[in-house]
Amino acid sequence: MKRLLYILLMSGMIQSCVPGARTRFEWNTLPAIPDSTGFAGSFAGVAGNALLVAGGANFPNGGTPWNGGKKTWYDKVFVLDRPDGQWKEAGQLPRPLGYGVSVSTAAGLICIGGSNADGHYSDVFRLKWAEGVLSVDTLPSLPATLANTCGAMVDSCIYVAGGLHRADDQESSHDFYKLDLRKPDAWEQLPAWPGPSRMLSVAGALGRDFYLFSGAQLQEGKRSYLKDAYRYNPTTGWHAIAPLPAATVAAPSPAWSNGETLHVFGGDDGEDADSAAVLKEKHPGFSAAVLAFDTATGAWSKAATIFTRKEIDAVKHPNNSIWSPVTTAFALWNGVLVFPGGEVRPGTRTPNVLTATYQH
Image (cartoon, rainbow, N blue to C red; front, side, top):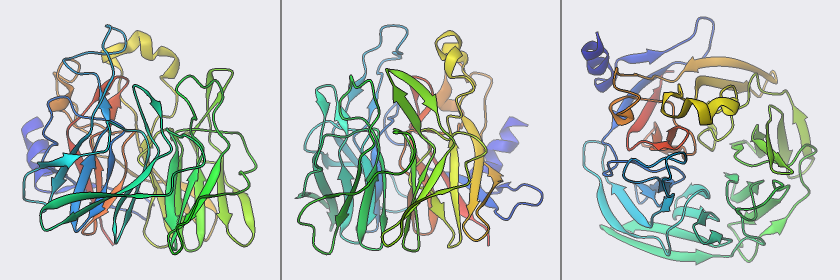
């Protein structure tokens, strides 16, 4: 049975549909990122028609937070130039870095903020891929250092919301910034959303509106899982919208839009948060629900389920299984939804690259 599921997944025949739902996906994989452990918090997106995955962090050599493992950040940039090709290491970031915002543009992959072992950063730079060569140029820095934030591009403007200013912050950020790429002189600080501060939210973009979904509020060092959601329009400002059915903390960001509905893939709903240190490697993984927000009706629904495959050795050898990832960027590449790497249970990364194709 397991062999059959594997064959179906590899051939793209596994479909995810829910009776009465409006969304159906075919699930597949791309070649795994060439690292035995994998990374979470990588920058990822499209530049020069190629898929880029850059930076991120892991606990190497089988380490975990509870066995004394040391979190390590990376500066490697991997490129996949075609779906049936192989990843190749194409260069380095300006420094080891992860947990920032990734925005794919026609001019390259923009990487915003992030962190490493030395702290958080305000830097903004763009990765370009042309004729087999990686290059990096800079854009205006954020007004503040920021990591664990989220962002998306609406029209020609990039919006960034929430996060943490420093690794030892006891309070999450209420920051909301905009950079107009038509005249990228400096970031503009805008009024914050009318709700709690947060980090690890999911951003969304549809029409002229920016969306902010879920996230975790950090208050006096304690994390609260949020279900509230907001829409920002540059003319009318912020508006609260219907809360999500469940928290989607650290779900792949930004949300994917089919033109009328925004989809949030998985995330940490907080159900196992208090027992994570006890469960350790027996943690079941994160939510596989695909939640859809219909912008016409203002209602949420469970639109689909992320395909997962847990092998019998999943506890000791998680990379042999397919999980629902968090703390990874979402990318749209040649019409295919791509979820590269990420964290699949607390402390555990994956090199696997999950994909989905929308069935109209």
